[in-house]
Every structure is written in C-alpha cells, then in structure tokens.
Length: 215
Figure (tube, rainbow, N blue to C red):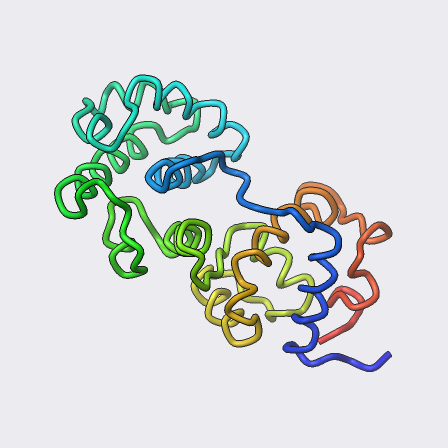
C-alpha cells in the first residue's frame, strides 16, 4: 500500500472520523462561556464525567461570575474537592473569576493571548474556549489527542503538548481542528484506548493508521 503524506493522512483521518462521530462535541457540560472556563480547570487530572457531576452544586451556590469572584476560596474548595487538587483549583477559579469581573466586565475574552493571562488557563484550555465558544481555529492537545496522533503517525514521538499542537497546525486545516480534537476524545475512549490494548479490529482507521506502517 502506498504511504500517505502526513497532510493527506490527516485529511483522510478527519473525513473518516466525521462519519464515525458526526455529533462529537465537548464532553464538559456548560451553557455559558465562564462555566467552560471553570470546568476545564476542574478537568485537570479528573474525568469530564466527574466534573459534570460536581459543577451543578457549585453553580447552585454561586450562580454567576460576580458571585464566584466574591466567594471564599475555602467554600469553592469544599465543593470542588471531589475533582482532586481542590485547593489549587479553587484558588485558580477564584482568581480567574476576579479577573473576569475586574478586567472584562464579567465576560470571557475572545482573544487567545488574553485567555492565556487568566489564572489557571493554559494553551489547552485557551484553545478549547476559542474553538467551542468563539468558533475560531483551535487544536486542543489533551491526553487523547497526544496519544492518538502519535499512534496514527500524524506526529512522530512527540509528547509535549505545545509541540504536538504546533505540528498539527501544519497539517490540519484550521477550520477542522476543534471538531477533529473532539472526535479524537470519542475515538480514544471507545476504540484507541489508553488502559487496554486498542481495538484495532473495530477501528475505522485500521488500514491507514501509523501502527500499520503509514508515515
């Protein structure tokens, strides 16, 4: 079988995953931009499902940016501690909401660099906000993305998130990046798993995947 260039391989993978997961979207529940900021901070080293269970209690007590900005960090921590790293996450959420209130009138900025200045927000979180909230080009290099693009052969042994992101920007059409990364999450949970051997026999990519020798 003829080996595909990374660009052609990327386009083929994108199209196949579109057919496999046509409705894939963010697996964190939110209906306002600031809530996605909170959830993505809580999701560090925690499952999205657990975060989705915890945040309704947080929003019931602190229903908007102002309320959360004024909340004692200890009260935030008490609610979010099931997500792990409760103290640092509560501190970041508090500081982030204060900055939104004081600098952006309670609104989430639609600028990547401005998002990166918010406490607790890194490249992954900023890209998620840019893609999901503002519909801008974005590549979210979470653990599923990094594992899968290495296995597929889209990047070669790169594990550092920013380097993976930069490599993918070169081969993924900008308008496809956000949805592509969401589909990698679904595919990584169902087929190309981390904790068990991947289910390659059920994979829609098994004839073009890097594990089968494609560059």
